[in-house]
Image (cartoon, rainbow, N blue to C red):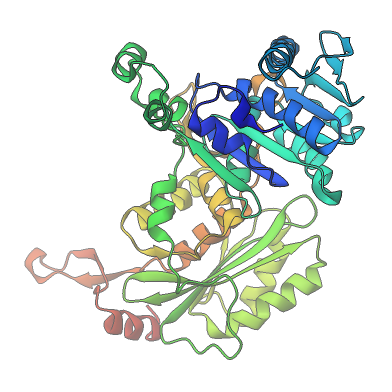
Length: 446
């Protein structure tokens, strides 16, 4: 049954008439998104002879969505003259005339895993445990069933945003302006002025992903740093023309060990390699590190816990003038993170284009003020937001810290020279910004 036989706005028709296997809809609030999804579930269950599961963030919303299903069935029957009615009705399930069932339930990974048929995730950005829901839902598409994800944005540190970047998904975006242009009768000025929250309006009605104020590296800064000539995979036979700098964040089992290699050209750090190692033996990590150390001018290695021995061995083999062991105290992490931020803000970092994992790690670190007034750097688990008891889940942001260590490796040292105007008093001055002078100074041992 085609959606052109029921009353839909053009933007709803465009969405509803697309039957791609994986479909994503970022939509403004209050434009009839759930109305459209519940109709789509009926259409596809009848057209493709399969069951459908509608998943919402709560039981209340699930019951409300099922009421829309029943309303559609009655209207469809009245408009078409067909016998389109439920053979069985309850608050959470109904049986269609072809024997197929539509379920409307709170989002639950175990429930989704036991389902065979299409899945519709309504307001997915509000679902708890989005990552587990995605892991349960996506395999539905393996043998041709359809998965639909819809909702309004809720920042970038969640799975909803990650799915919005999935190249396999057919993507639809409907802002409040799009809906009004297609005939929706609402007063945008009233909404904007009444809400009196520019960021909230941008996210809820304009489909913009707004980062929390505490995020250190905004996506705007990250966007500016992306460049097609930066790469996470060093080409075979690469010969650097500038100084090479290296940062190494060490981990073994739960987190990644990451080497981030920069090439300094002028005053800009270009990413030349990002090597990720998960659950690798220390011997493997050491051999990988030693492949790069001969070519670098300076390397900064995480010497906290597991990294202490590796940093010491690298210093013994390559010298302390080349290898710096960095212990991750709170003060050191703050300095590393803020220095990395300033490099992005000043346009002195280039990173690969479109690497979502790198982008997520870079965006996951924030700055918090403790009750005692101290600054604390924290990183949040991508895709989860809040853990039990409302506490944020913490991740390592391993790529971020490897990059921050690489940036620290590029820090120009200071040298002491006599100031003749102060009768022998010595003051600290920075080396010249000129690249050639800088390279000469480093090779002279400064």
